[in-house]
Image (cartoon, rainbow, N blue to C red; front, side):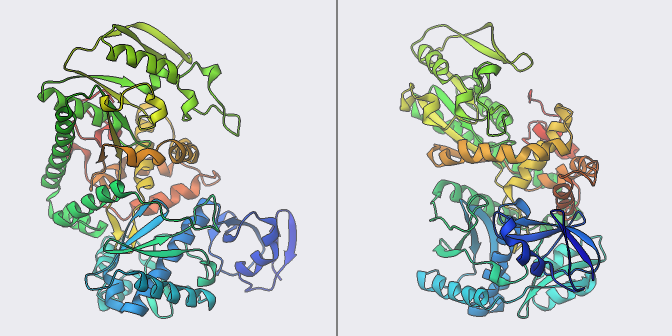
Length: 551
């Protein structure tokens, strides 16, 4: 019998034993529900079987790969239930659009009742499948056969997606005769999806799921109306442009119409920036424009373009980076690992910032600091400012929306803007693209170009960056006066040729290898778009280079 080694312990298991059965013997040794196996250094789904001697580890729902598999499996479970309750056509036409708070928004075709009763009916069907531990089966098809299968079921989005795949085979998942394609791993059966809720929302349903931090608790849905409306506006723009999925985008690339599409979306973004500038000026008493957003949102390019728009309206903008108010390095708080925590509010000299801004508001001449990142010290280099009647300070930093950051400034003197790259393009109708993936690829490309940082280092740092965003940015986004979506519908196709060589450099023995492999598989969906097509003020140029701004 094959010998399985787990945490140094060796056990024999009959050939053909599933990893799920092995996991049951070691469940108490793990902090959380086991979701995935690591077999001889390779990620494997739990329905796979022991065939030879191996070293085995497990991922739980607290791990990124485990949590992603839970979300993916719960989503397919919902679509299977929509298929059973409302019919195959409704499931095919339903679209998994984007994530809001801890919910996945699934838009359904017109004519389906969006009521609490409908949500309860779907939940009942989902629970039936959970209680029956209905298995998810994985089938490998030749790509042509998979395309024919989805064509016969009128799932044209998937047929179009596979048209551009270079691989000869594709893995499909099945639950009780319902077939679908998913980008990533799945749990072995519906019995693993024990924690979820479903509520009616807008023209569809919000699937509420646990977080990695609390993987067995479903929190009450936190309404984020401004964020939803911003996402929905971008989704609507994509529908108007005829690009809702990667297959649609690839079609346009092949048709040679990308230059026009790029100009149209860049113009749409410029118009939105102009509208925000007009609203700032119309208020009459705004002196501080506070811009905040998560990493790689394009804050710097946005602030430059906003400043240009403000100038066209007779205002004189002056940029200020909150990073220049960092406390000296030795005073910076440390995180639980003993590393400097540059993203917490206490890393900023809030008191000094407010003193300077109040003095500027009072008409005084103030010398502003510059932070020297090499020495870890704040310096004064003769950068004096004094506000005239038409002057506006454009302040950029992750804490810009937090009231504690600008506690001494009158509310009417501030205009707050939340910016993020809110990707609304889908892989296909049932596979959304995470906004986090888009930002990670942006940062990876930029850091390699401007800081000489490897993709491995960027991926290694990303969980810490994400924790900082969850704590310091996302809780304040609904307090913004305006939201701006910096994502461009074609940008992943532009980033692809820059990101792929960086990802291929990560060695197999590195713990970041599997994330790199996942991102490479994701980028494989896209045809490339040359960056030469981008205007020099594009937000995308902040990452790929060639911007007319100092970014």
